[in-house]
Image 1: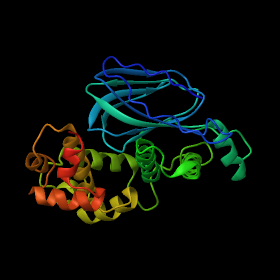
Image 2: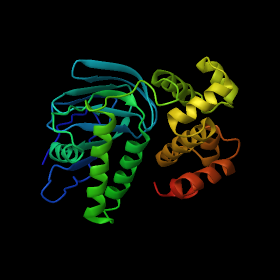
Image 3: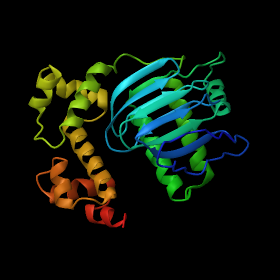
Image 4: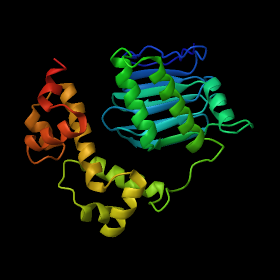
Length: 290
């Protein structure tokens, strides 16, 4: 079983038990870690890792081997660290991330079943968006936290789906396209998402976001949907709800203030959208942390 060495200067790591899969004991491991401010260092491992940011937005410096990246990381951002590559994160405040480790045996098996016989390398990426991996990650985290009620078949399916997604979109087989078909370039998408993230409390409109992105509102509307998988307004609402959920779990502010701080005109609007997207209410979420 792979046992990563992760060091924190302050808070200890929160670790969800590893997920085994029959004779493929290295198929999948799930780790929920939280720490900082300070430095996280992970040595070279025998498996590729997927780190999904699960907390509030933080600024940090990252390094994968000799590659480095600095800037804002926000909920749902994904880092991919290939096997055999050491990594380092320097955080300015507390950070939470869901780390998924996919076994080489499973990757080889999926590659062979897909007709790829040559050696395949997983590519390193900083703070990309991948809706499929993000969806799989949150589902795995919920499954682990609930004690794996869906059983081994479900876990096997999820591990295989992760392996397929890594090979198709983040490996030497196909590589990463510079932009999705018909969508905006990834660097432009990142710029738009960062602007939204830093201005959630404001009265955002399609026009203000388009001006910040340096494009027309109509062009932003069409290309963002293709690149992000949802319309701009839905993305903004989702990010407001996700940020509110984080603040509610912290339990430091009243619901009315949280609603205003994330950009909702009234806490009833927060309640409506939270129930629609997360299936719970601000009150229940806040009480669950008591």
